[in-house]
Length: 153
Image (cartoon, rainbow, N blue to C red; front, side, top):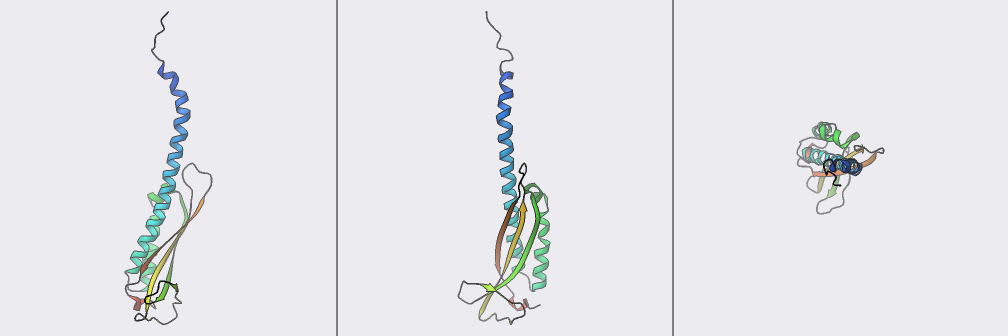
């Protein structure tokens, strides 16, 4: 007796789905986590670059706050970013040295002998698609202050 081979492939479809669906979910989760980390890094770097080009500290803080919308945008939502924030800190170092310390904004500004930079620290919780836990994430970016005379303003 010869049996017909018709419909034989449909019998293998169910077991194949048991393997394919979890693999697709794992790949989507990894892609979502990568999107969250990438969005946080992009947002912090862009904020540091824009803050460094401003003329005053107040304007730099405004530029950093404007970049928060990137964290809550479409990429941030796909990446599962929650409780995102950006923190702006001014640091100083004597000219020629690489050790930066936090600058007390009430102190004197000395652009002739010191180098100033903005450090933007991005912090958030990332909960990728299909994950049941959140991952605390931090990213720091810096930018050399182009107009240090405006730091006191």
